[in-house]
Image (tube, rainbow, N blue to C red; front, side):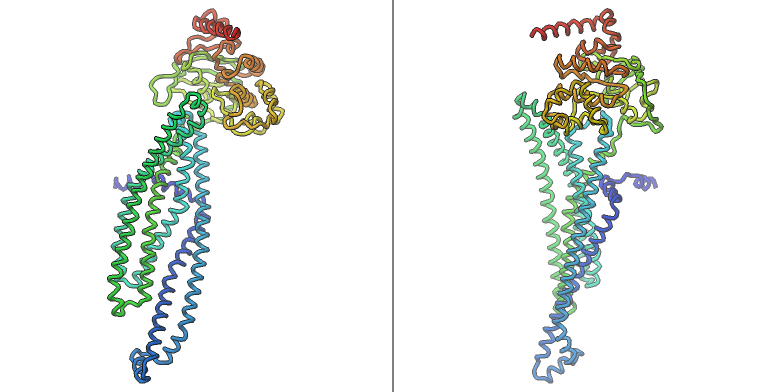
Length: 626
């Protein structure tokens, strides 16, 4: 009972779950299956007609011989011995040509019917499979966009891309071709076996042992081929990752003269993929000859056992021909099974990889009773916040506590790895705290919905990401309904308007892939304009002036001083000049707060801040002289 219970509770396979998605396309599936049944039955009707044609020809030949017997008395006696009359045989002989024509017309009719419904079956199967691919790609994209940042920390971009493309395509091909081929194979096998037994049960028994032998072969090859295809997809993912990294980082590759090294990496990945493909090819190159050998044995056995039946008249020539044709229909599905097993193994491996994404659990989710965050004033508090990244024992932040009043500007200073970026990633809940809590206007941010929280926070990340499209579309990314005047106002505030208007197409200038046609400073100012257009109550600027020169920085700072009034702003700054006018400057070191205060307070109370200020002041003077 326990075994049965555990079997019932076992989750369905990924491939079975994927096939379950066909429920979203019931009408198309029903049409495809109905067309398949009609096309298959039309195919199965032909051997019956051929049997009639051959028997008609054989009877006509026999009658001709009888009617030509001389003398007449011998002819009459021979026909009487058969229980026939001269008139009846003559009438049968005269009807033979018409019967052959009728059968030929029916065969052509069934061929047209089969072709028509086979087209309908193929078209609707393709419609269904494309719809399924549409569903899966949308589901994967939706899931990926909702997963927390920790998921991306553990997975490579190339692997995620190939699951949404190649893996979905493998699954689609199985649905479009393999699944219907399996249904057709099952239908052909079942109906053909019934017809064979009805035609001649003794010959059918000769064929019967071949079926389990074939099934065992397919089960064996199916078991060993699925892991082979799973490994192939892993190697394809690695190949795609190397390609994606090199295309995205082509400037770095060229700058460091690493073309040859990266080419070797790619060749190695290509070689591994090639080797796995050949391993799969060897497997199926072994399978198909085995199957055809089994089929040939079946044909020889039938010929051997049918010969005496034909000689002694227990089996007509038409029945034997019909039996032989149906035998082809019996072995045809067996040959198809090799193709089906190949598609199914690929689809099964791909389905596992697809559902790895769809079943992935986000570390940051809405609570079941999460509320909408009301319009905020912008009071932000960190209360004994400690944070560790996934599977890391070392804390990135340790008992961080501070309070930002509404409208204040908070500057975060510290060396690389001190925890500055982690702090601003925790405010919009890109990650959740390990311990402690963060509140906005006294509300724990884990108690509100993610959308209502993030919609009130404007962010300019350290790594500027622009999307293919125009400058206007990128600035209005968070507010597609923004007017041209609002877009221009945000651009002016970010000191971007002048350089935008210097382009021939102005705000309609394409930015290229990831903003490739713009400089680092230009991209950053567009990103700032994008955040400012939202008019958020909380503003996060992650080192937003790191990619601009001193003149541009001064322009941005002047604009930001006006725009930050009335907003709580968190600014990661590498330069003291960026932080000195902040209401609070937080000095971080190895995840701990070392000092908090204004510029003047820290100059007096924090030796670390004074040291940073002095060193940067000297550096700035050196730059100005240079």
